Image (cartoon, rainbow, N blue to C red; front, side, top):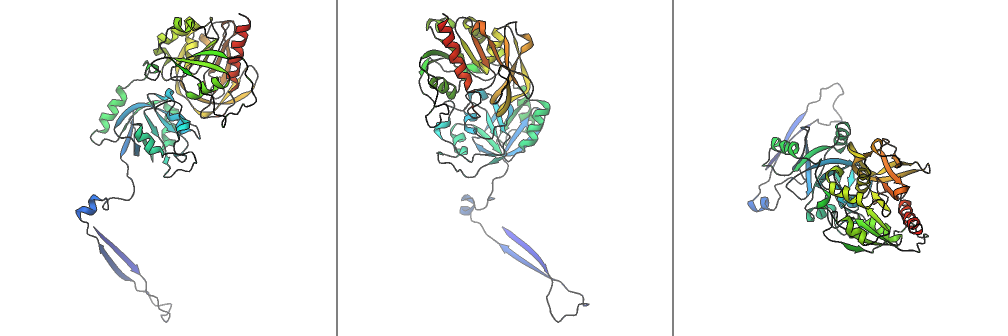
Length: 426
């Protein structure tokens, strides 16, 4: 390796007249370094910084060069953007992101590292993580490992040093796009583009891949260190059967903190078996994908509503909408983030909510007697339903808000009241 530097200098002389022309002097410095094969093997011949080694190829034909972290390989998924400022670990472990690449609009990710207490499920279900800047160090007293190591262990691909603002604008203008992440040089851009255009997510049952395989009991409450509703007193215990369409741990913790005994069942658990348990209420949880792709879940909801009080969250809300005779539709780019304003039409209050969904219920298709209780104030889409006659309530967003604000936590207490009223009127 040789380095050549040419310097052009002007001589300095105090006695030289000001009118005399200055003469320059050219000097050349030559440096050379010889690297042995051992030095090259140790990496001394490489650049001291990481170079672009990954590509994100979108179905619209755009190609985005980036640097990789976490796992390597090739993965396909739907690209969505999330506007949350914090909580990337909860997002990584949210089963509702199955089949998707999550692009974080907040540019700096990884600075708080990873800790085992913030997991929302037992594994990562998303296809990949797209960020602008990867923090080179962590600064948090709860941190046990850096983000890059965590993703590598979970076999999740990540890319950084990519223009996330430009991609976000493209998604907002054109809608969610299918993309392919790859670190494999052997695959051409055209091959990756063809993969993105062949892959489909609409009409695919994703909840069966994230649901539990057998029923189990859940008893863990919100840790007292994080409990923000410490003054609430819940005397009577209610038995709730929770359908796991991809449920988050903090939904179950909030119900347990409200005094509920919870039995979690798989997504295909028969309604007849649920009713044999004689529960005080049934929760239909959040989950990934297209609600129209899981007719078996819609039938289960149909068999249960009207018999016991029910509460639907996110996917559960959409399934309730379909079970009531309504229709769902795919949104342009969905709602993903912890800062979405929701109008509560019953009390006139505004809640800042955490949301994660690509589908919504069309309120115009719902039958008489079903009340729209909440609307998203960004686009006026349906964000909540209720039907007192059928003892049901549902929210399109996440009242447990992990991550996110706690404005909507009272929804769990409303469900408790719904079960209490049903018991008194039985």
